[in-house]
View 1 (cartoon, helix red, strand yellow):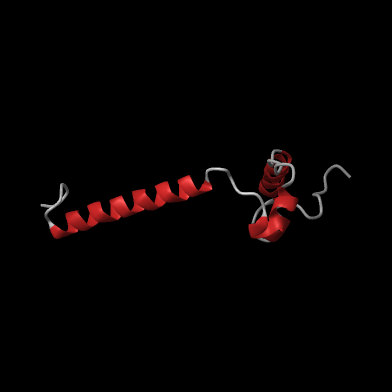
View 2 (tube, one colour; view 1 turned 60 degrees about the vertical axis):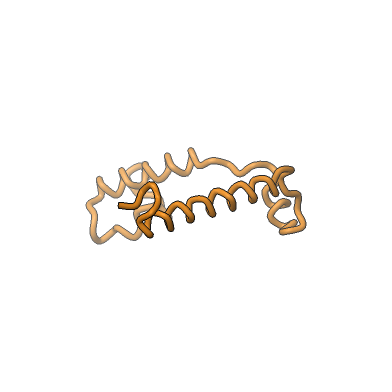
Length: 90
């Protein structure tokens, strides 16, 4: 039946509030979004199931250390600015 909406469409909750043409456009957009949804990388479920014991990036320690140092430096810069004695203080 060409004129009927699909059951389970994206617009099911809008039925009493939105006219039929708007619901149909909404459902078509939902179908486009579903068809263009990115696929997960291969092995995602296995990596998720491995949990913390799973493989980690080789340079994880370097990445975490760099983020920690950058955060401490930014916090120090903010504290200097708040005290009025740093480059951003007034």
